[in-house]
Length: 108
Image 1 (tube, rainbow, N blue to C red):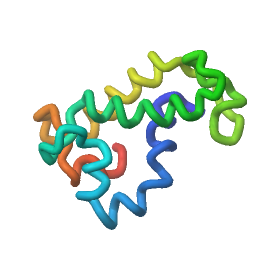
Image 2: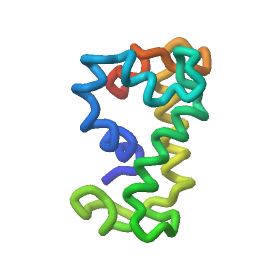
Image 3: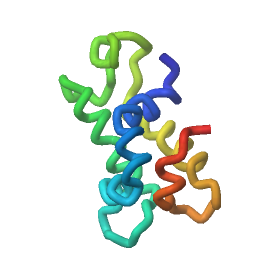
Image 4: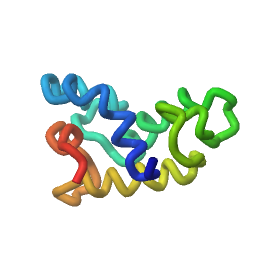
């Protein structure tokens, strides 16, 4: 499994939900209620998936903790680096925030 794909895999189960209710999906990320998602909000929400999968809490997803028990281990630092890259790709207007449409767009 390629490291950059892990954030997208964690979002995959929510894809249908996100497309049907973009505003509701945005509110899951939007901690301050301003109608947009900052990088910090995105990182916080998406890091929860890593933390849930990291069953032993060592900050590394071992192969046995990854979906399908496949792929190379990844650290939280590497995972968050990938999240920052993903956020910048989703931020198509380059304004430092994601609106509901950007947040639910398929990754490029």
